[in-house]
Length: 72
Image 1 (tube, rainbow, N blue to C red):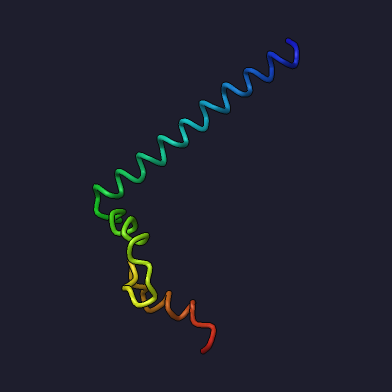
Image 2: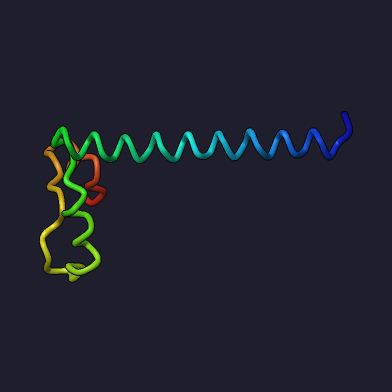
C-alpha cells in the first residue's frame, strides 16, 4: 500500500466522520426544538433585533448574573 492509497482511505473515512458529526448535530437541534428545550426561531430574530435597547433572547438566572458581575 503506497502513500496515495493510504491518503485516499484517510480522506474518505474523515469525510464520512464529518458527515456523521453533521447529521448528529442536526438531529440534536431538531430534537431539542421538538422537546421544547430551546426555541431556535428566537435566535434567528437576533439579526433583526440587535439594538442595545432590545430585550435579550434569554434571561439569565440569578446565579448566572452573579457569576457575570465583575463590578461587585
